[in-house]
Length: 477
Image (cartoon, rainbow, N blue to C red; front, top):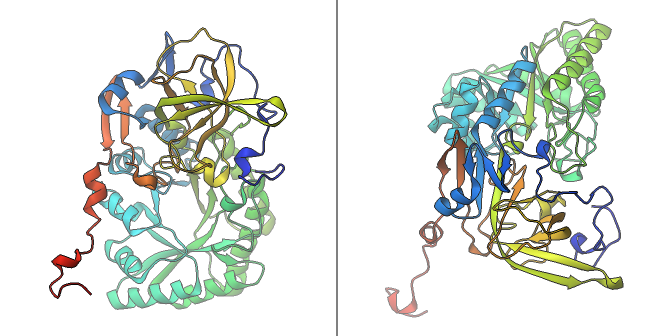
């Protein structure tokens, strides 16, 4: 996001040479394998995922389409479950959730985070055990909290003093006890985009340890008969590649944990370290594997607990995008291709596809980087630097800012973008009245729609209209 400003926005500030980290490939047909799901491969230039050829998938289900690799998703879920064997691992429903994914999460032995009534409804519709659900959010309504109490969610992560009051009143009204955690801010800012760094002080989440609000929140929870305090919850950000940021956060949260034991005579049984682990969107990203993260984070907690002379609490983590993110690619069809002259004599190739910011807003929202590949054929043409853009009436409608593609890319070609499993379908919109794409799960050569494509009837169903003047009972006004 840095660089010289431009009146038309960040996307237009760079020259036509691309970023320094992007290298011209020897073969633009080749996959950079660690950017893709486990089963992705090319056969004679055609991209297959889960044994399904993407041209065949598009012929049946259309484009754009999100392609969800079931084997990859389950493998990543198991990797976190096994690496963090002594922890509770919470899948982030906000990254992407549908009933099929909720069922896979349950079958692989993970817990589930939700942060809205809609996400909770999807989980319950899938038969997910509410006792394994954690409920997040900085502004949970009374209705949402009441439902959480009624269905018996496993934990509510409290985020404000008002929320403590609300939940205490609701548990008293229902005559039930609800387990809770107190979300705290440890003053640690993850090295990530400002909008997704969530543990520094000036932001909307949690209670500050520094100001004493966190300790006061603990006191209020302990005084509420219907609230059972499990422990403290911390989250330092998102798209985090190593455990170093957790060291300072764990030290500060565990110090508060110890203070609660000493001053309030309560030994909290649990602690949530958050997570938000990163994935590889491009060759500049180098994420840690779950086993490495588990080893490093466990050492940090053990070291801090020894120093404080306290027993280690039961730990939870939240991998965030790291499970579903790499498990999905999005396939598009190319519509137009044109060169644009830039200042200084440079030129940029614009490749327009049939989707865009309505199915992946992260590039426009965060300046996120993505990669792509020609998915429907092999090409003998040399690579050229291109910008892949969407079809929306918006200058910032960019899918891939810079990527080398075969120089003969043409209308009708298929392009696939890896790493679109997290925060793409869940942030998708109907901008320009676009229809949100389907999610098609693939495994062992079989493709199955798990979230269908929207239709124009879906768009019009909510448009109830205003009666024309001639239809109004009292005539024109």
